[in-house]
Length: 244
Image (cartoon, rainbow, N blue to C red; front, side):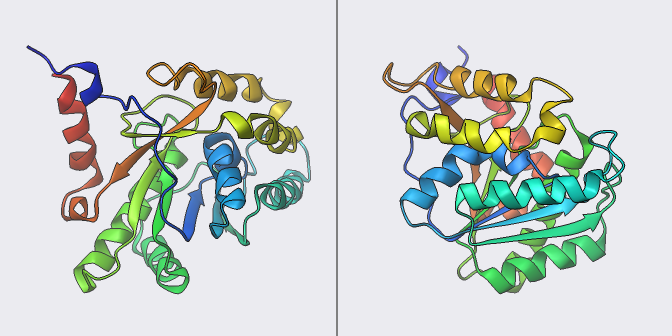
């Protein structure tokens, strides 16, 4: 017999993770498309949130001043989402790679902000920058765990473009319209594809196992600090093994 559905996906919405939150986004817009509803709920529940955007986003369109445009868009979106701080790094779009330099920079950021919850793109995302961001943050958390087992943040992978293994669903039904307004800020990206419709479709699909009163939800994979002793690949594989 294979595992029943409740081994694979939650049947109840979860409470918000403990704050403060630190969200790592590969590109300006990933934080909003992926978990904008949850960030809006955090604002409403007075949870402090911080956003780090890793790349310059230079390949997300054809405008000559695209980097500046996307920088302006993410600042507007962060204001709507209620982020306490937004920091934009300048790594080259589509050139993210695992390096000691970036792992160290992420580790220093986590140490400075001391979040209770750290968010990064889900491990099975399609875009290479998304997957590399996940690996970078994971390795930084591993390095922190080797130095001290006290006050380790809990890691969460968030979905942006596709479904991944999850074990946590956040009800964002009441935040749908606000999330739509925040997504609409990204004119440079929405002109490239119907991202808003695709994201809302994913949020709708994530309510499959939830109460009918929940119209939209965002999915997350919660990793316990004990998982940091393994690679992100092994930690994710353990979730995939549940399907077999």
